[in-house]
Amino acid sequence: MPDTVYPAATHDIGTRRRELVPGIPRAFDEFSREVFADGALPQKTKQLIAVAVARVTQCPYCITGHTTLAHRTGASDAEVMEAIWVAAEMRAGGAFAHSTIALHTLAGHDRDNAG
Image (cartoon, rainbow, N blue to C red; front, side, top):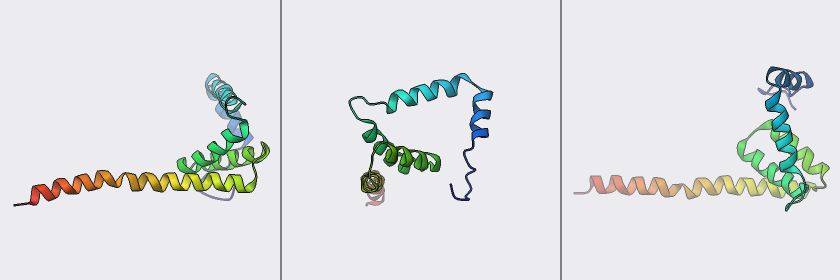
């Protein structure tokens, strides 16, 4: 990971996290294995979904990890980039769709200021 405000996710940090509360990381790891296992969706598709979601949640660790895992499960560079574009559209689409709230609010102000 480049030198940023986010510290590196090191082996020592992972070990410390597991030492502090061992059961929860173990349960989370098992949950993650189950979620990303082949099922109705293959692992590659699940990792491409994770690539898109990681962009929306803006977690640099997830972005790096799931991009790597998508590649390992056979996703091409173009598939990863398309997943990123889907995330961008969904994020922008959400902002556009939520303009409905602003327009309703403004209409209420217009009614309040009329007459």
